[in-house]
Length: 157
Image (cartoon, rainbow, N blue to C red; front, top):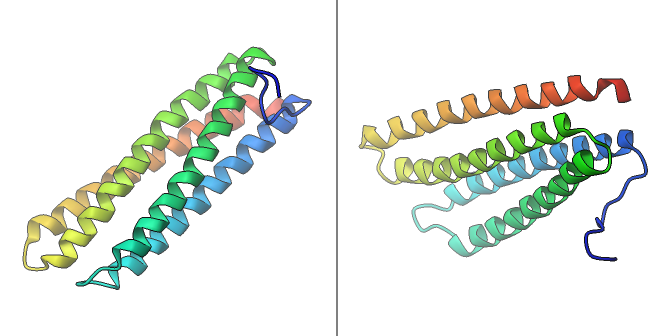
């Protein structure tokens, strides 16, 4: 593979858009596995199985990095090869919101553990509720960006 050449090079715009949607579906699945893994981790309390959870975080991080790398390659192709800066701009916005979502998810997991470890402290419960609200807002913003991407790429279907 020559420098600057993508590991993923679909021959047409329609396939590129399909691959983007498939990557978003993979991201959703990775979040689901991350959440399920964290729920399992919390069930090991109060003597948490941190090694197992650490391995899960490593695997999920690897998955998210691979997805993001490929999404960024798609963004570049949309802009450079297909002259669709509108679609690449949606991906830029999406990547920012996805980064926020991952940070919020990590905060939520820590908050849930704190709330579980200190059930008498209402502040921890409140913090979990606040973070959940932030995640709901983030998810709504992600949905809007994806809807805009879908709308702007519909002529390809």
